[in-house]
Image 1 (tube, rainbow, N blue to C red):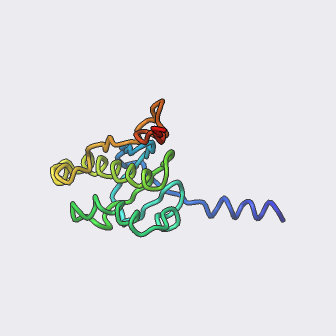
Image 2: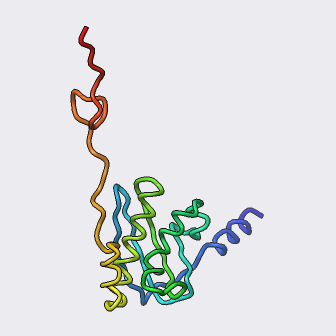
Amino acid sequence: MESSINNQAVDNKIKLDFKDSKYATGRRKTSIAKVWLKKGSGKIHINGKLINDYFKKQNLQTAIFRPFAIVKRENEFDVRCSVKGGGLTGQAGAIVHGIARAVAELEPDLKQALKKAKLTTRDSRAVERKKYGHRKARRRFQFSKR
């Protein structure tokens, strides 16, 4: 009985063929996304889940579709990516960076539009480190004159 349940779980696993795809890496804060892109019908799988299951917030889903909206190629590419590190916002930013780089590699004539929207450049902003003598990165301890 248990073996038939295990076989069903294996059969339900997503099978994606990405042999003729382009690969790109995207980074944001401490998140790293490995992105595979190929011509398809617009399906996006993140860590084996559909985009709606992985990112519940609508603004993060919209951000991921932004590179396709800029080049006016919605529902023309299938995306498979694995992302790790950071939080959801950083992961979404890393995926956007990776998708933009993969689209630019797959179709070089679209690179200029993505570059103009600043999607191919890595966003270098990250959390500033805490300094000694301070409570946080810039916040100091309370000063009392008397």
